[in-house]
Image 1: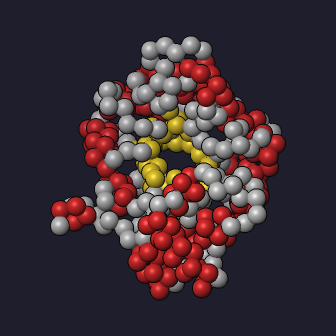
Image 2: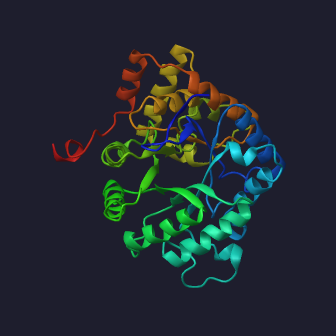
Length: 330
C-alpha cells in the first residue's frame, strides 16, 4: 500500500479509503468484519463511515458494525484512521423526530458525536466530517463546538463533504480568524465521468490545504465495465449504471472507454481508480467493496501506472470542464 499526507496535516493515510456505506444494508456483519480485516492486512488504514449509514430505521447500524470489529482487539482501533460524519437526522434510530436532532448546530454536534462514539466503541474520532452544508448555522458556532471536542480529546480533525468551493473558503477563513486549524479534508463526487469538482472544489481544497477524498469513483458502476457486464448472464439491466446507459451520449462515451481499455488489456474499474490517483490534490478515493474480489481489484489499482498516451485518450473521451472562470466565462 502507498501512503500520503492528508492535506496539510501530519497525518499519514492510505491512498485507498475503505468506504463502509454497504455494511449493514448490503453486507452482513461477519462479511463486513472479514472485509475490514482484509483491508487492514493489505495496508488500508483509512476507514470512512457516517452516523446515518444503515439508513431508514437502521441508521447507525454501520457504525455499530465497525464498533464490534474494533471490540475484537488486535490493535484494530490503533491502526485505523477513523472518519465519520454528522448532519443527517438520526431520529429514526434514536426515537421520534424532534428539533435540533440534525444539521450542524453546536447542540446537535455535541449529541451526535457522543452517539457515534458509543456505536463505534471508541473514545475518539480521528476525522469528524460535516456531511453537508448547513445554511442556517454560522461557522463561528460550528468551530466553537469542534474546538470543545478537540480539547476533550473526542475528535482530532474536522473535514467536510459535498461542500462547494466557496464554502470551503468560508469555513477555513472563519477558522483562521479564531486561530483554529479548520477543515483538513473534503469528500466530493469526482470521477472520470463527473469532473465538475475540477472547476472550484478541488482548487479551493488545494489552496486551503485540504486532502480531497473522491466518492463514487466508479460513478455508480458506470466506469466498472458496465456495458460489458450488461451482456453477462444473470445481469438484470437495472440500477444506476443501466439508467445512465439509456442515454445514448453516455453509452457512446462508456463504449469508447471500454473499447480503449480492451486494447490495452486493462480493467475499467481499476483504471478509473488509478486515474483518480494521478489527479492533483487527490488523497485517495473511497472504495466500497462488497466482496474480497472487489477489494483485490481496488488494491491492484494502487500499483497501476497509466501511460501518458492513455491519460490523453481518457481526457478525450471524458473531457473535464477545466478550472473556473475559464470553464464558464469563455
